[in-house]
Image 1: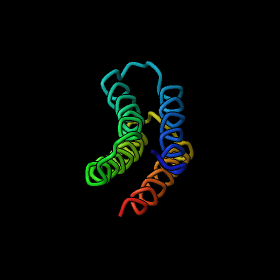
Image 2: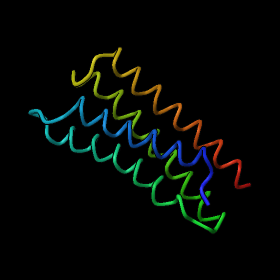
Image 3: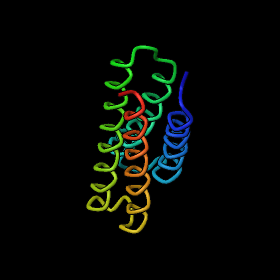
Image 4: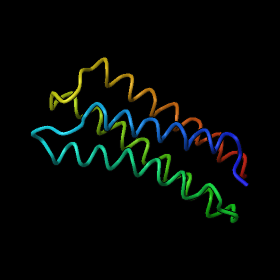
Length: 113
């Protein structure tokens, strides 16, 4: 049974994915937009996938992978500043959400040993 924190992490990841899609949408740099939107969805999907995992070892590995996806997404958002795809101020907001989500995932992992 998923914990409240685990469910919250998944919901936050879904919200973040929606916000990333809304911000980056479709533009002339399709490759960048596809990558960053895919990364946001992958983060949300990975958390949803392990919501009902019974094996604690598999769950911890999966959560660790989700935490890595959060870091990847934050790095891609930061690179968007140099590509002039996002303002530094907006990037800071997204990166903070990624960092907060990563911290929450870390707390969920603690619950599973």
